[in-house]
Length: 638
Image (cartoon, rainbow, N blue to C red):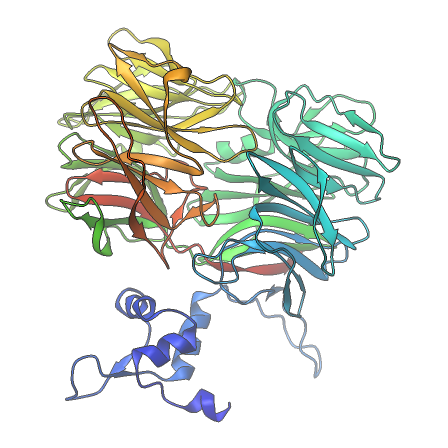
């Protein structure tokens, strides 16, 4: 140990510098997570010191612990699990080279507020930044000979696939209006997904000839190659009656095969978190949430039929969360994250609408919470919670700070609670795995706990109450989804809002019930926030929608409806660290010309990749889903 490592750290500033974080962050870690900080006896308040060795031990205890192998003679065997990066950054989309000696990934390099870029690192070496100033970088991978890096990034209102030398250079556009570009392992084919096309899977031969690979599937979100380059695994479904799953598509001639891998996972109470899939040999790897947390799972499949062979196998260890599996040469890479996803709140200044004070934690635990729904008076907030005890629907009394758990015995598929405007009833959805998939909606009475099924299959998920009898639901399973009205009196359903070329999500009703705010996202593009007037149960046509702000999503209203809050898509669409607002006139829908900077977050961030992560105003505070989603890339020998 060097002299600098032995030196006592005698202030919050020195402790923060040693850990590479801000002072407020390490103070929070001491308060909430047991960071070993000592105070001088009889000294003034705030006089603190820390032992660097103790800090190092505490830090290592928070990371994924490597599994040790027994000693072989005098040599130490290579650990089965090893850490590849060490920046503890916002990290996404790792991909291993064909020999598993390099990894390419997207990261903000641990710099708060930085826009994530593409990085390359030799396993055991230093990281090299490949891109600069690009937006929404995703899906990096290597060419077959590992000499080039392929990735997608936002450009104007769409995305392009780019390529660049693995050792650095200028990126060039490989395919326009495209994403998910991947070379086959033998280097003979290049596959990409064309944006805004009913048949998105395109194959390009080595000679440059391009053809559409007809799959008969819709909503294809991901594609990857088999080891022999003869098949593609795509994530999609034949129609909205079936949920998304892994399908094996022959490159030459043949019928796509439904593996049922994700369906089996759902039947075993796992919630598939991401559609980023890895495939090698007879093993398909995916990320799913269960009672153990969020982990990478492996499903063995039959080499002949591609049907699941046995139950899913938990692959990643410990209390950490694991995302974005990648595999090569019998090595599994993934992003390991010390997840702390809970409900937080921050006060609102009554005169400006801006946040005041530091965010305050409302829940604790290693599970996750989401889908906040509040009564009109702001006193009752319903939310979904999942942890080691299973899945629960809860209602919080915002004045007392107490929770009531509902329908704990209802099974793992219950979710998406929506509290009524008067705070007396709650609607919630369930998922019945298919095919065909069914999404029933039930309504319960909070006074006695009784509930009844209203819709056997509404085709989506209830998002909010429009009045005492009608629910707004967001349809699921189609590229351009829509909002529909569910009438709980006669169990009828009718359209409310749709778009000819954009996907709608995150609806929020204004306090006077006259306006609906929502996201609208073109295929491959960034979301924008819009507002539509509601008149006698009907919504304004698309041509009359009011544009609030571009490159933003997750709108929510102030208590008086005169401010519309939202989250800009910076630094990345997957996580958000800022809240903006615009003035709104409820009389005519006029939107303020300038945005208002409401709040900037540093260590805790809104994980927008989690469904129903939108904040909400409850009384005089904003309630958030916040978490620390910074982590590192790890590698596991299979």
